[in-house]
Length: 89
Image: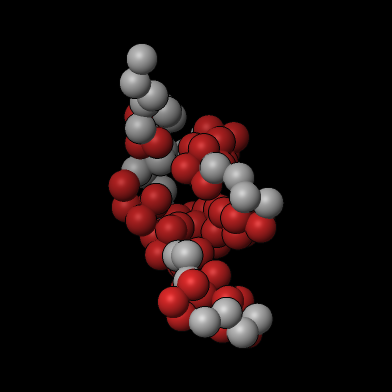
């Protein structure tokens, strides 16, 4: 049986205001970074965050979270001295 995608795991609710969107993206980025630290499933973490907060897991939201998390993660990798050929995200 095929798993549902992240975008279909939460109900379709009203769209978020820009301020709420940014707040939730920032909070969810923290969840993703913590999930990566412990080698967890970040797609599931995003879906769980959205379900817990009662917000839709839209493609725009997921893309914003992953892009921002990747930027932060890469800065942490550089600060730790990880060579670019070993970057994971």
